[in-house]
Every structure is written in structure tokens, then in C-alpha cells.
Amino acid sequence: MKYFHNILCAVCLNCLLCGCVSDQKEPENAEELYNQAYNQLQDTSYSKAAKSFEQVELEYPYSKWAIKAKLMGAYAYYKDYSYDDAIISLDRFIKFHPGNKDIAYAYYLKALCYYDQITSVEKDQSITAKAMEALNNVIIRFPDSDYAKDARAKLDLTIDHLAGQQMEIGRYYLKQQNYLSALNRFSEVVTRYQTTSHIEEALYRQTEIYTIMGLNDEAGKAAQVLIYNYPDSSWSKEAKKLVSKK
Image (cartoon, rainbow, N blue to C red; front, side, top):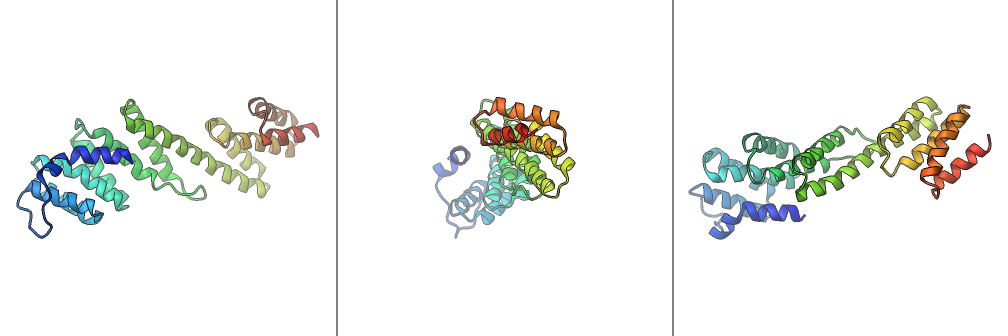
């Protein structure tokens, strides 16, 4: 989590230099209130910290601390698993402070809010699509940043996850002997998710279903693509067995 560490150090440098304010003392200005929120964050009192950062914005909206508090409040919400609140805070930061030096991190943190909510392939994947969009935003807007590097790695995993869902549905249809629906799902993986870990099985399933449907030419073509690109794959060996019987 070096990205979080870096941004916290940068945003809170003044806080560290000024020292800590005791929670027992009522904050008298924006800086003290901000420091109190930061201390709560350090104590893992994330919900309290988020509310304190929001208080900075409300009570001292024109101070330099208000801008910092927007981003730190979003981070506190993220750490508290309050992803919707974090996204709302980040959207406000992005809208009103597009030129801020920490804007890349704001986009990255928003992507993490979606990414961390990705569910298993058996469930609805609408949040996965949002994660992909947000990760792509980071990559496109800040291509040379460390955030973009991490976003690319997470994007690969996200795409693989979406392919996995198509495979899961395809296998279900195959068991139900709904061959056309199953074929559509496996073909989706072959067409859209060629670089994922599911491509070999998807090509094999195409071969299998075409064979079952008596479409031997199509089965042979699918098997040929699989065997040519993945000659040592176990799926290629199985595909050879299928087409050799015809």
C-alpha cells in the first residue's frame, strides 16, 4: 500500500510538523480540527475521522485545510468500507479541484472503491464494469504515474474476472444442454477476452459444442486455433481427441 503511504505523507506534512492536538481539547481553528481528524485516522477510528474531515469543510470552507480534508475524508470513508460515501467525496474533489497536485490519487482511490467491491463470478458484475471504467480513467489520464501502473495490473485481473463470469454461465448452459446459449458465452470470451486465462477452455468448449451439434467444420476450425496457439495445453489434447473421432 505504498501509494496510500505516499499520499498521506504529502497531504499531512503540515500536520506532522505542527504536532498533534489532544482529543480532549476542543479544536479552535481549521488546522487543529484537521489535525484532530488526522489523529483519529491514525488511531483507525475511520468513521470519526471522516466526520471530522467533513467538519473542516463545513466550518472552514475557504481554508487550505478544507481542500485537504475533502481527499482525506474520502480516504477515511474508504478505510471504513463506506465506499459510496468515499466515491461521493472523491467526485466532489475531482469536480472542484481538477488541477490539484493529488488529483491522480483521487481518481485512483475512486477506482479502488469499485475494485474492492468486485464480487464472485456467480453474482451481478455491474460493479466490475464500473471498476474497469475507473481504472481505465486512471491509465488514460495519468499514464506515467505509479497509480497507472497499479491500475493496469488491476485492470487485467478485472477483465479476467469478467471472462470468468461468461465461462461460468456458459458451463451452466452446457450442463442444461442449451448448446446455443452456451456457445454464445464461450464465443464471447474468444472474441472479447483473448488475453485472459480462460481462452484455452473457451476454444475447447467451442470445439465441444460444435461437435455435439454436428458442425464438424466449425469444430475443426476452433480446435485448430486452440492447438496452434496452445500446443502443450491439456485443452488442446482433449480437442484433438474430439476432432479425431469425426
